[in-house]
Every structure is written in C-alpha cells, then in structure tokens.
Image 1 (cartoon, rainbow over the protein chains, first blue to last red):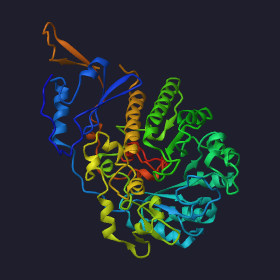
Image 2 (image 1 turned 180 degrees about the horizontal axis):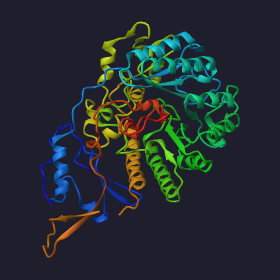
Image 3 (image 1 turned 45 degrees about the horizontal axis):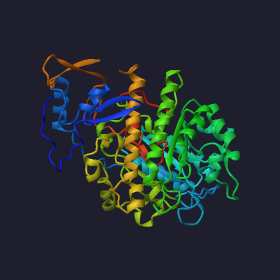
Length: 437
Length: 69
C-alpha cells in the first residue's frame, strides 16, 4: 500500500474516494470521475485515502483526482418556470408552507394574459431547445381554463421557435377527472400527485377545508392516473416527525402498484412540532434502508419500483456542468406569481424581499448575481463533500427558510441526502450490472 | 471483476490480492458533452423540494423523452 500525501487544508476538492456500505455490500465511489467499485468487506475496512493499492487502477483515478474537475462558467439564462396559477386551494393541509396556497396574501388566480405572457418571457429568454413549465399552487386545477389555454398556447409558440416545451402539474387530485386526463395525456403533461400514504397517515395532515380527511376524496382519482399511465407521474408524499415510518408508507404505494414515489420531509421552521429534528435522522435512515431492501428484493423478481432520490444513473444522468450548478433557482429556474412578479423559485414566493422582477420589466440582474453564486463550486460547505455532484447543493430555499442564508444547507438535509445517494448508487449498481461480488 | 495486487503484506510470505468489481468506470468523464443543460431542471421534477441533481436524465445522449420525469 502506498502512503500518500494528505490533501491540503482548505482544498476545494472532495476526497479521493468515499467508502460506504449498503445491505452488506461495500463500495468505493470516486467523486471526480464517478467511478463506482465494489470491494470485499476485509479490504473495505483497510482502505483509506492514505492507504490503497499501488496499482494502475488507483493510479489512474488518483491522477484524475489531482487534476480536478473541469471548470465551468455558471449558467446565466432561463430554462424553466413555475407558474403559480392558483394562489388558493381547496384543501387545508397542516404543514402547508404557503398558508393554504395564498403565500401570505389574498386568495387569487392567475389571468390567462399573465400566464401566456410568462410563457413568452420564458421562450424568448431561454437558450436551450428544451424548456419546462410547472403549474403549481395552491391547487392549480382551480384555474383549469387558464392551465388548458396555457398548455395549448405554449406548445404552439414553442414550435414556432423550434423549441420543445414540456409541462408538469402538481395537484392534490381532488378535481382530476377523465376529461382533464384526456387533455393531459394528449399534451404529455407530467403529473405530481400529492398524497401522504394510506388513509390513516394521509388524513393526519391532508385535510379538506372543512376539516375532513382528504383520502376518500382523492384515492379513486389517483388510481385513475395509475390505470391510464405507465409513466409520466409521481406520487409525492410529505412526512413529518409524527409519521417517520416511510418504509411502511412506501410499501403501501408499491403494493397498490404505484411504481413512482417521492416522499419528502416537511420543510418547516425548526421550532414547529412537525419539523424533522436531528434526533429523527437515524430513524429516517433506517427507513430508507428498509425501502432500499424492498426495491432490491422486488427488482430480483422483476418488479421495477422507484423512489425518486434513489434514481441515480451515473451513465445516463446529467453532465458534470449541469451537476455543478444545482437547481438553478433564480437563474435557470424562476417562479411567476399571479401578478407576473418573478421569484427565484416557488418556495421563495412567500418572501416579498426575494422578488427579482416582473415579466414585463425583466429581472434585477444584481439580485440574479446572488443566485448565480449558489452552487457547489462556490459554497464552502459543499466544496469538499464527496456527494456534491450528485446532490447539487440542496434546496437553497430550505437553507434560507432555516437560517436566512442561501449558502448553508441544513445539516439534517446533508445527512439524509448522503445516505440517499449511497443507496441510489447501490441500486444503480444492481440494476445495470447484474450480480455483485 | 479484477484483482489488484496489494503491497502491504507485512509477512511478505506471498502476494496478496484485493478483489474489486468495477461497476461504473469514469462515467462523469465519458459524456460526449460537458455542459449542454438540456436535461430538466431538478426542482421541476417530482420532489419539488430537496432536489437531487444526479437523478436527472440526460437527453442529449439518449432519445428525447415525452415526460419531464
């Protein structure tokens, strides 16, 4: 084994390799090249950054690490947009971060003119061929006519400019029906369906305005989407520290043949009784491991189930330039409210001080510069993290909500994200390579 | 699977090998492009919150997809 010089203090590089274990399999991940290898348990214990075989494989990886990743200029142009078409909701969930969809203001709907002008703003400022638009709320289906008109208009205007526009819509499902699904299928509108789990769990927090649980109002509609589509939708559930049993929740969805699932911790101020705390992390990680085992076992018998954060594809995923600049909020991605005001993303829309401009007057370039810096290459905390390229730096709105600091990802997020990525790498290895060691 | 010679056998009685299986070989360096930015923006995807950029799908090297996710 070769003794190597330790990394210099203050290096902006991630470690040479990261060691991790999932379900009794032992891996090394090389963050700069993306190489993933499995080793046996004894070797795994002995390996370290300062102690590894003097062999061509490690030498080559070491050269790549010493050279470092390619440098990129941050993106500066727009690519995708969230349209807050309905700043009101037909439900009243306890953990709602936008106060019943109102974002702290009055209940209101976006006009057709604002929605169409926002689409033109996106198409005229985007430099990529692909652009994306998400309808968000409140509940966007409360403004169905505008959603429908905007999708038709967007497709027509994109085609004129030789661009491809894709839409998604985040809904609680209450107003879904066959007619709307016919339209969504025709225009390939991806759907994000909010549901937290079985009735006993969902109805803890996801309530109708009159206080009744929402499960019975939406379950048949959510199943309708499943029965009509093989892809193009996700179940998106929220969990809090009162229902950390996400392994059991996942099984409920998978047993009901929903293959695409995302379960996210509620983003709340630290003092909120539902907010995830540090003492909850080990339980959540145990639950992620249960989910990993379940997906692993199901894949062995040909059942392909997915958890959003585990879906890492090292070969088919984004290029390193894309991975270096994370979510793109405030730069590549913006949210438009009912007045046409521009915010860095949907989460920031409840903070008036975060307004960046208006679709008719443009973006404040000084404010945009702040968001250009919100990336893993500039963020002190992310620079040396092994997971930085696959993570992207976390949700800057989450950092802001917690610390009023865009560049400080909460430690709980980092802990969970790193374990999710390890599990994702493990599942990626079994899905693409067959047997392991 | 490959065997790597280990040089740290203290007893020096015999050569010791380390067994490794390369699952992915430098995938970040093998892209035909480095910064095309055509794949969907992460927060546009299914989680709507704590994004994971690594689970986005590149659409330059593969067929364009109908769906965002």
